[in-house]
Length: 239
Image (cartoon, rainbow, N blue to C red; front, side):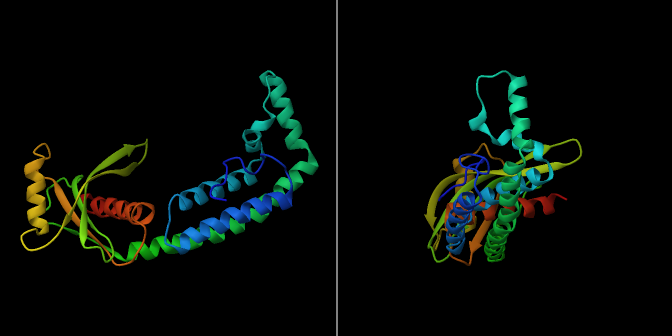
């Protein structure tokens, strides 16, 4: 099973063995992806399902949102009563709780494996600046060198900031530009100068080199890890 539905807990047959089969098939597939150093989208999905089950475990009222097959054309009042009957059904709740208590440690175990792979990839990448960095390095270029790949992939990046009432969140957007082969006369400094000449709208862009020392899928692992690492690096520089 490649993916676990958001409402897998309560959709279809509510039976412990049936749900156990669905969960284990899904986790087996995710583990296989992690074994091949393929992190996403499996890691994000696992985090979502783990947090969702924890929330439901703490608040049974959240189960109201997990019975879409029970929704009919009845008015809201009748629908609410229907949900209340479901949650108050001792036999159903017993099975659901059994599934939740079984699932949480299983998901957490695979989630820890994913985090281990993430940390391995992160520990095997190096990010260094190209030349002198501008005062505001929130936008610029990222030169990505995959493990044992001769070509360098060039991306434009831009750091975005989201503010809440009490803190800031940094995100990053990347756009692939081109692939170049580095050699005599095509140093990173020269590549940066050529990019500046081509795109004059970016005044004083920053540029970073990312070297990966471990084989892993580009889109499913290296780039997501690299982008987060670059955000943290730039955040420390701006602090």
